[in-house]
Image (cartoon, rainbow, N blue to C red; front, side):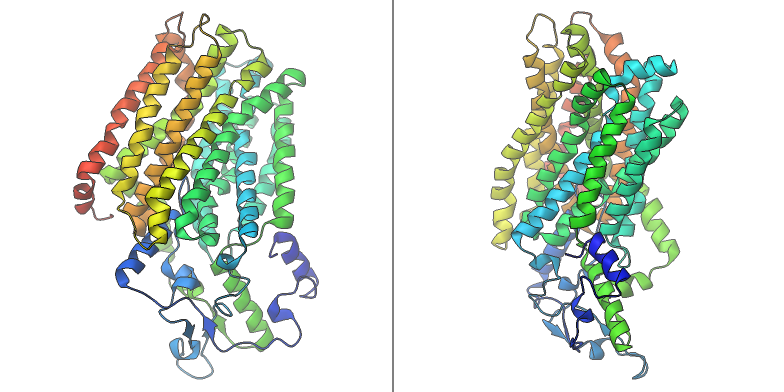
Length: 563
């Protein structure tokens, strides 16, 4: 496997260990490369490329591959004579455009076995869980941190908020960097995770709240590749029809991470103290780092072919290139800066459809992080749970996530996967119709939670209500991102970059005032009643967005310069 471990040994041994085909004795460099299957009808090709670009960065992740980034889609013929296509001014300057050694090339991620793909996807899920469990793992220790540093509860929550801010900012850098053919995805995962693991040592030893805040922000930034490039990794290895399945399962790990954090944190905070929550995070993320270092391969076709071209140049002394390498060579720094920094903000705040759905997703994220304030009130103050028991109450959210995905997958198979496999691409408005399921469950579950959080009502009832809320979130998250992907395929990187930054900053700020909102609004017998009801009412209003887009979405996008 083309892992970090094997690449390092190959480099250190000068190609003797874990040798690539080009480094093996007797290898004959080809003069022709396979660049993809013959083209079909232009309409179907355009839709397929648009959907593939779209799904490449879903959930949370701003990623887009241009047609030339994937050599499987850069040619209209199966075999291309690169000397004819890429001949330069003279015979000594011609360059061969490197592709695959045939349709069954084992280094092509699309040709890997189902078990290998599942193993890779499982590592992405593990990575997502291991870093995002860190966002909330210390929250059960808030009283101890407040006492240790002599600070208010709001100040003690700032490290949670800045972590969320960090993983909203990180994708702006790491997402486009992972698309560069010289970089790829694997080393971004490994290097940033290594930095994340190392950061947990000074975080656990923080002498004051200021250092804790700074280190938590950096931890959030370096945890973000799990959010920034996971969708692109799934797009590297899976066909379009099956990517929603991988993304739905990935959503489970994205939910389980922050939700499971208080479960682990509650045990260590009560038994060993607040610093041990970060030592536990170091062990979890360190174990994940070891797995990725030894077993996670490079999945970016652009990077695999880029390194193949370098090996062929070393072997033959001739000049080789790749389609992705040529594309990046033509980009100006001003263009890259505009794409990364300015265009995401322009689309987010000037495009009504993107802005409205961005607000909707931001509300869901804010609600998820408000649980870290609501649950201690309901289960510790009202029902008298200790720190460990209060942490276990979050398991209802995880159960809700699994139930939600279990409901979503059969529906998406019938409405998307099966039609795509048959060559029929459904209209993008289909996703908004499915969104109505989530937009109904989401506010209803909040009202249910608000008025069952009472000491005379069994504690299992609000736990069930919180689980139902996650079911609604799963449907909304998945359908909204799929809708945006299909509506803005050319600018999907910018759409998701802006959306990720927007929702992270909104959700990150929510815990700072959520406690005061619950306490102030009351009432005393239902301490989270009116606060949660307020969020639920906003959810009802946001639920009108899918209805508007079903009826007038095409008209709104028709007048857009981006759609």
